[in-house]
Image (cartoon, rainbow, N blue to C red):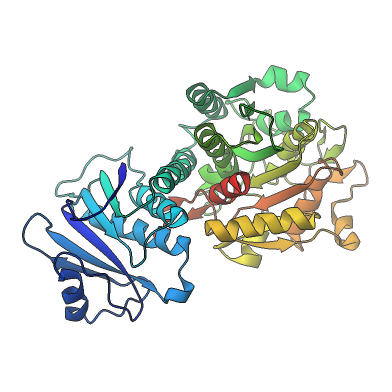
Length: 475
């Protein structure tokens, strides 16, 4: 997609004019925008959308409502432009100018570009074209008086989310642990990053028995991935992002039901987010060192699969009694978090579709932050607010709740039961992070996949967490 700024006359086939509630839009195309506003009795309410046919070079004018001016922020523009681009593409329009009610600064320009990229995204590479389908990709979006640096940044941020969504949407017969490792190697080669991949033999040699046990029931053996971005100068800080990478989760021997097993291709979303973040930092080149770490594994039932009652030893030496093979994500993270803790980082963040309990507590539009570090928790929440992603913090200081993951025969149980399940999962992960390292666990179950379109999200994987982490890196 070509994203540019323009001033003066419009030279696109369609124009989208965004307007605040109760306020006439900027007059463009010799007053056509205000005539359309009056004709449709537009209110400028959020989500309002009108099409006004034109004659001449500009063939269509679209009015898009933003809502109350006092409540509008960059995320409002991101969502409105994404919806606009999605709709005009379905009308067969590939060339669009965007006019805002205010002069866009760098942040707004970035949000507009990001929205344009996300609105243009569709996951349809496996489908044959249908007769009469006029939907097209929007090839060019021009923002009136846009800031070029903001447009460039927004394009990178939008593309990062597309990378994550594409990877997460790809099915388990396409993305295996090996192909995920190959994607990481491709990203690293194209972006000048370091990348180390361990196969199942090296994984065992490196004492990652927890990761190996989860994956040994699959014909697709596990892979461990470590990517590194190093800035040109002395890094301001050293960050690590760890992603849960279960390429398909059948539940193992504790197999999921017919409904629960659907969309389990997206149990790798945390890992997809990490790969996307690493691609973005290779382009944006922040002054921080960034590590991306993934344990890629497929959880399948088989004669070789790990069993309930098995006891496995993680890389840091702690033993785990398996009571539920469908609580596999935290078992894989035990090894990857232990590894990340050895890197002497200033901050460690993991992303995982870990528990249904967090979705029960928060719904499908807010992710959970689990951390004992007040400063880091607030930074994540603030970064999410700026990026348009919502979080709610859970503390992990309930000693009685912690007893639910005590085992009589090992150091830990891999599941503490239903009550407080999201919190006990966070408590489990905490056992594999060195106490002196600021750490936050982002439970993105419930926000990782949507079955409807809204705002800047299409049907399918959401890439939730990518914007927050990049905002945190770049702040």
